[in-house]
Structure formats: C-alpha cells, structure tokens
Image (cartoon, rainbow, N blue to C red; front, side, top):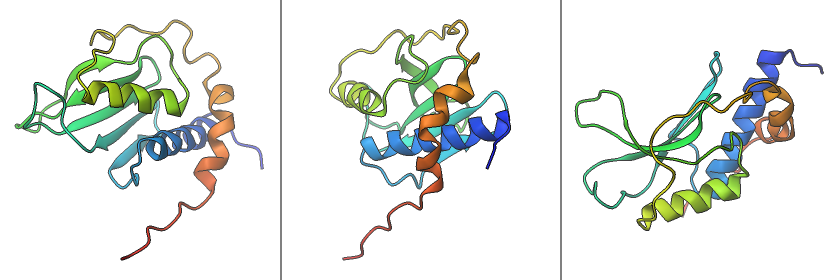
Length: 145
C-alpha cells in the first residue's frame, strides 16, 4: 500500500504520538492528532506542574515547533505554554517522557518561546515513517479488575 504525503504524515504522526503516550504510561484516551496541515497533536497529562496545582496539564506538538507543555485555563480559552522541548522536532518518545517527568519534578525546560525549527517539515513524512506501523496495530486492551 502506498500512502500519499498527507496520509503518510497522518499515519506516522498517529504512530509517533501513540509511542509517546505509551512512554508516558497513558492510555491515549485523552489525545488528539490533527491530520490537516499544519499537523499537530494534543495529549492530556496526569498530574500538575509545580506552581500551577489547580491547572490541568497538556502536551502539545506541532510540525513547526515540536513539543511544548501547557496548562489549561479555567475559561476554556487557549492553553498557556510553560515550556518547550527544544530544537528537535521529533525527539525519541522516551526522551519526551523524560522531559515531561522533569517538568513535573520542577525542572525547567527550554523557554516557552516558540521558535520555528528551520526546515522542520522538509522531510516530515520520511521522518515519521518508522512510526506508521504503531498507528496500524490495535492498541492493547486494558484489563479489567
């Protein structure tokens, strides 16, 4: 089966987000992958960031900036970005999980400024290709107690 560029990005991103979700120990039930360009993803996280004990936390990804961590507002408006992973657009899922763990322990990430990663989308479909299979394999079912 041959995928066109948009399909390849969509399936690769779904697989990549699934791997990040698994590394974080989450089920993925509270995640979303935006297939339309610019591609993006949203993962609701368990826990609270130091300094914002009453705010839900989300992990965001977009194809120009990579990963960022944000807190939800009480008004339902845009989230407030607290940290950015850094210059790597598609870091290994385990590295993303370590970074998130550090944020929950109060370690500072890169500044919350969004810098466009030069050339980030030039080969996005190729860079996401190794993750495509993860999107196509059914997720393991949670065992009931």
